[in-house]
Length: 132
Image (cartoon, rainbow, N blue to C red):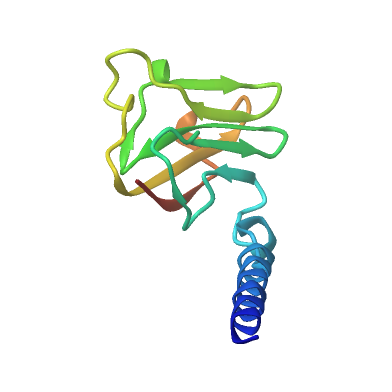
């Protein structure tokens, strides 16, 4: 009888934990992104695998580039898709970005209106996450 009660309590706590873990607000829901940035990956504050995709999806009419830990990523290591307004880190063989080390990292997307010089940057957005 006691064993059945203990197992029921453990199951109830596990279900409550799952509900709590997956019901929290996502970064997109908190309104922290500027209007020019529709989505970033991985989301700010996340703990992700080192193989995660690092990317920013911009609003229509914007383009940009990425900085990882304050250093501009070479264009050869970026996949910029103008039709989707997306910028993705795709490191080439031998790139410094091929294997980011475990620990905290911050990425900045510098964005500007399509057709405007990069020196006329419309803005930037920075987010941080952990890799393990």
